[in-house]
Length: 115
Image 1 (cartoon, one colour):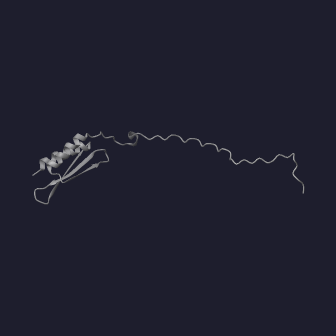
Image 2 (image 1 turned 135 degrees about the vertical axis):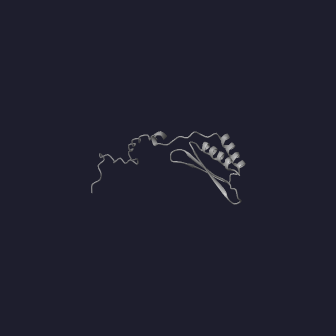
């Protein structure tokens, strides 16, 4: 058995792995505009106008209402008011370009049909 010669260098051991290359940055994502998606942008409604419409519904005795967004971007307002006889209701529906306009038209019709 031979002893290690003093002229051979000792092996160098490192406790650190070499740095891994950084991955390339993915490209930035961009969202298509509403027009590119075919989405209609509705104007924001005035909260004062909404408060006035809610007061008008209470005045007319509206029992319930529902607003639908239609596929073509318009709105449909449906409400129920007391009918001519106890226990019966009348259904009123109005369609317009905006929710506010549909509500106004529906409430005008409710006032006209009110007993």
